[in-house]
Image (cartoon, rainbow, N blue to C red):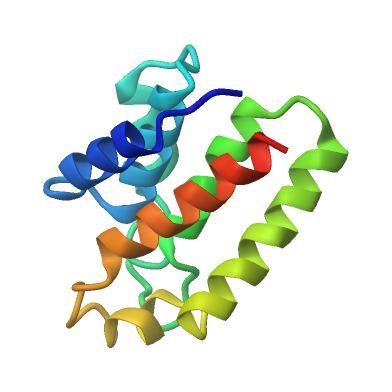
Length: 132
């Protein structure tokens, strides 16, 4: 699967100016592989994961990771590969940021300076897995 990572990053950064991490990551990934789904549907799929699942921040999983997991499930057809990719994404994200918890990464939503970088990091990681 051929993905232009520069264009992917550009899309994510643009979306992140007005959408959540989950929505931005999901939309950037799906658009980069031309997955046939409407933007409005992607927003509906991703919005519940914003702010660490429903805005829980302190207790919820980072939206960048959940957005990537949704995209992975949509794009990949093999259930075994979907699960293996999910495990790899989780472990890579936790290693990079020390946690998968939105609240720990953003100080309970007070500091979102790392958000776009989290989105780009996990999207790039997923593309690498798709290209294996």
